[in-house]
Image 1 (tube, rainbow, N blue to C red):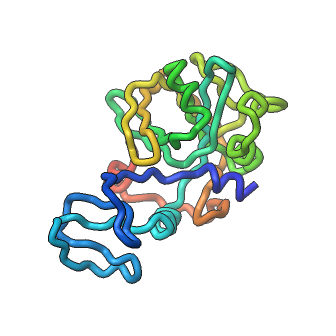
Image 2: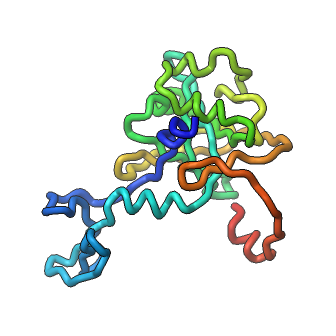
Image 3: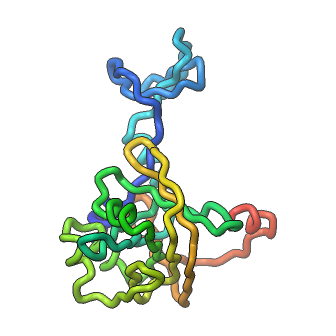
Length: 222
């Protein structure tokens, strides 16, 4: 189950495509330096571009940022659809906006575009099976077989999650090998429980709790 969930979690990349050079395939146009892939030393380049780190290094670094696990659902012409993801984030309070990053090959993305709606649901610590199910290659409709779900605000919603948001699709932006979708929350719900946490390819549990300073709490929460 862990491997299936890991395949579904994705970290969006954003870069300006240019013709590849030996061992360096992607570039950013904002620095006069380039990065050597072997040891990440910075050296001067005449064309003013800087090389992006390779995807393995990028994934390794971003994997050290612990996240929750979400299931994003929608309903299209062929019925309900959903995927497991952690590339989600609150974006704005006024209006209440959330963003979700969809792989360009996502089978749920067409449903979102067709319906103009999606739901983001945050999984509880005992819902590893749902993370694996929605990360799998099962036909989309079969992912919803034999599990408890209902329609809420025009989107399929899974039962037993810690909370979720039903959203109206607002904008879609390109983001490398992903599309970044923003949605305005039109319905919200919560439940008691502990979150399913994902860190460096494994599931983790909460241990000790320590109150955050007020300024940190205000800075990190939407």
